[in-house]
Each structure stands twice: as structure tokens, then as C-alpha cells.
Length: 202
Length: 195
Image 1 (cartoon, chains in turn red, cyan):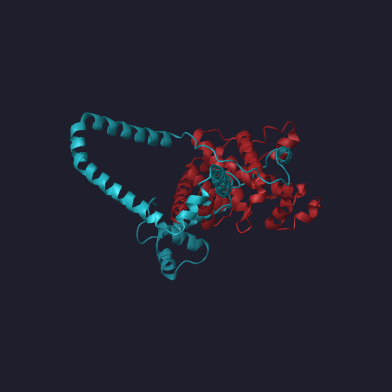
Image 2: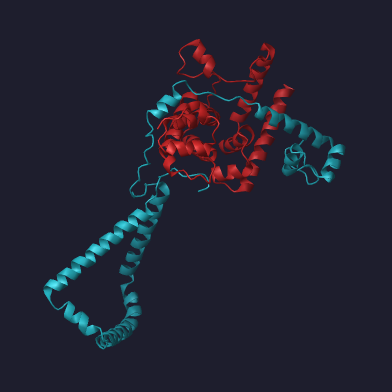
């Protein structure tokens, strides 16, 4: 089944999944296109290793797309994807502790253009060089602060304040009581406030 | 500023309410007079702004192609067969616990055999008598039923008895297969959020 990729961009997740269920390869690719950056960003911030994050994100998509026939449209597709991605990251963290933090481009990038294309995307296009530098520093500060949080706090705060998910969605995704999610997020914010205040005071 | 939440200061929920412009008038009034809470609100807003501006990361350019090479487009997910549960530490500990309990029970019985027999002596005879009476009464009741003779003549011939046995086994096997289909999950560990 062939569908024009351009026409897919206006469709909802549910509609794209319906086309994927009918066997449209373009629909599969559209689902990857929509979620590759948010999923990769979440996993990267959780495991803090680009190569590993790419492997875990890849496994997430393979799991999701190979099971797309079983997807139930009454649930949010994005919640399903994030739930599997977060589980993959948490499972990995439980097995192993990683302390490296890379803000560079993809390890697969073998040309300067590819390194630039796959590195951190900071700020809007057209910003002045000074703003870009400031944003890069800001990005580094927040990344370091996030990386110091406990993994459970980290996934909650990333899903809430970076991915914009509601408390209820996060509770559903992480199989946690709503009150626990709220507590984790507020404790994480508390820790971030302290870390950022210390950075500003330096 | 402290890391705890004093009773009369802004709570975590108040902070959320403040950011969504839904702070109660009572807490708004408090905010006007409390320097600590004002600092807290400003810093929290800065944290949220920084998180909101946190950059997104891009995977490598071949990311989608590598996924598509391992995805079966349009094919339903394979139905996993029921498998033996994994040997987790907790399960092994539970099994060891049960085995230890059974071993302890056998050991105690062996050591305290006389005591155990004295307990059982009186009750065994009574139980046996009651069981025999019940069994006899049950058989008499069955033999008195009007359909008993019909069944007796049906299984009277070895050929018919064999046929009935085969039919029973076939029905049992069909039931088992149906049950297995019903209890086998459709997509293994992958499930919808909230499902």
C-alpha cells in the first residue's frame, strides 16, 4: 500500500497508525519521523550515552512498530511509545550505572555536516551567534542539572516539563500512583532550583 | 530559602497553580508579603523556562532505515506461546522456601512419629467409617436413578466403551487448546499505555 508522505503529515497519530495497520510503509516511517527526536532525547537524557540511547530508541521503535497491529486507539499512541522508551531506559539503568555526558553529535556522523546535523539543537534558527552561545551554555547547565537527578525523578520531570505530558499521563506511562508522580516532579524541581541557584551564585 | 515546605508558605500545588495563573487569592496575598516565597516562585519559573527550552537531540541519519530493516510491515505481531516463568531471585527464593518448609515438615513427622500416630489413631477410624457409609449410600442412590440402567447398557460393550473414551479424550484436548488460545497474550511485553 502506497501513501504520499506529505499527505500523512496532516493526519493524526491514530489515522497514521490505522494506515500502518493496513500495511503502509510510509505510515511506519511517518510514525518514526514524528517520535524519533522526542524518544531519542528522552532516552539520551536518561542513559547519557548517545550510542546506547540510539540502540535503546531503535529497540523501542522496533517493539512498537512490530506490535502496531495490537495498538488500541482508545489510548494515546505517544504515551505508548514513551512508556516503552522509558521502560527500556530504566531497565538499562537498573543493570548499569553510567556517568558519561556527551553533548556532541552522533557517533555515526563521519563528516562535519553530519556532526552538526545530529548535535544538540539549541534555540531557534536565525538567532545571533551570542544568543547561540548563551543557549548552548544554558543547555549544558540544564543537562548537567538533569543528569544529577535520580532516574525516577529524571523521567518524570522530562516527561512533564520537556515533553509536556500531564501528571495523569505520566502516572499511566510509568505505572505509578498520581501522588507519587507529583511528589517526584516537585522534588526534582526542588533539586533543580538548588542546583541552578548554585550555578548562578558561582 | 529552605528546602522544606513550611505550613504557611507556598506548597508544591500552589507553585503549579501560580504558573497556571490559578493561585488562590489567599496565597497571592501571602506572596506579596513573603520574600522567601517570592524568591521560590521566581527560581521555579526559571527552572521551568529552562526545561521548556531544553534542546531536542537527533539520532543518526540512518536511524529510520535501520528500524525499517527490522520491522515487519503490515504483519501481525507473532503470538508468543506460553513459556515457563523466568528464574528470578524472588521466584527461586520462594521455591527454596517452599521446599525447605516441606523438608522441615517431613523431618518433624519422622522425629515425632509416635505423637503424630496418636493424633491420627482416633480420627482415622472415624473418618474411614464415615467415608465408607457415604460411599455406599452414594452408590445405592445412583443405582436407584432411572437413567442408571441406560448408561450401564451403553458402556456394557467394549467397542462402545472405547468409542466413548476416545470421544472424551478428544473433547478434553479441544478444551485445552481453546483455553490456551484464550489465555495467551496477544503481544507479549508490548502493551498500550494504561491497558
